[in-house]
Length: 263
Ligand code: SF4
Image 1 (cartoon, helix red, strand yellow):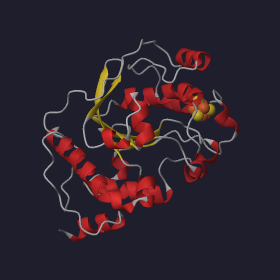
Image 2: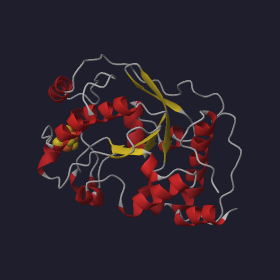
Image 3: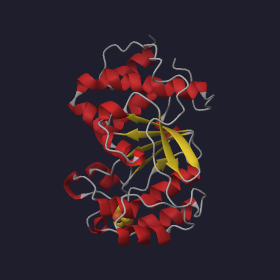
Image 4: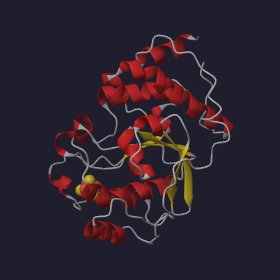
């Protein structure tokens, strides 16, 4: 094992991780959906669906998979957004960060205290661990895009309310529509359940390729452990590394430009 790879693993708190051959049931030819998500009606703009979601308290509103707004317009609206009560307690809107032309997009649940203060998703110790997880398969943070389901922090890091996710979802959907990533990575159980519109346990969500559906967009999706959980449960890090290797294998098979050989 090279020095640089050992450094990545050390940063993740893993002494020795050996690459295992992926189980046949996990990676090979598994682009078919494992979790069926319903395709919902499509509307054209972002404002109307947001309002509809708030009025009907839908968990997930749907907007057009075609890019109705530019990045600049979308970010401007999010930064001024007062569609749910979280605007009153936020320090910053955490819109998202990274490469907007990437093939890999990560989605977390919601900003925490550090993210709220800095205005960037996945910072602090959890962010450093996420960076190390990406580096362990040769991907740098700056080469992916990272966003959350909610753009504003729920007080005391409580779970998002349905009314909040309903109001905020169009921003994430529009980000996904603009990027059209080759693969989505849901970071943590809550993000995975939200994107797949299910209530499966983490044990059933991880370790396989699922399918995210948004209008005409069908995007392979992996669910990985949240780094904050791994900091609390370091014994799960070996499984987390196996998940990262599955993602690497998928990207290699997809001829991803993002994959760089791990030295
Ligand atoms: S969480 Fe989303 S919907 Fe609520 S105020 Fe923030 S940006 Fe708007």
